[in-house]
Image (tube, rainbow, N blue to C red):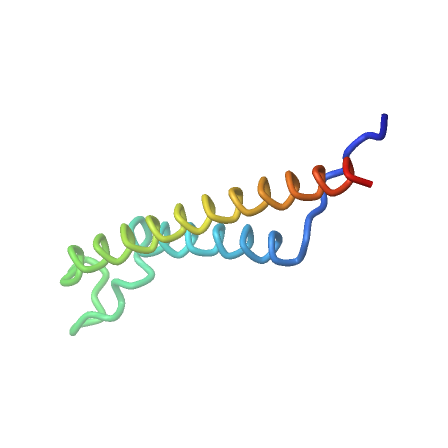
Length: 89
């Protein structure tokens, strides 16, 4: 009986990388003052866009979760198809 090896394609790698990138962008938008400097006074103590930053961060976080779920789902489907193909041969 052969041992099944999981295959990681570039598509899987890119999906995982982008998932972490979206999670990082969401973290930066919500929890750091990176976007605060774009207010009228450039004053970090005056956050005029707090609600917009939270909405943007939550939307990007949700998209990152969906992208990560889709990447894992495609990886499982790809490995299941590879296993079925190997069994037929």
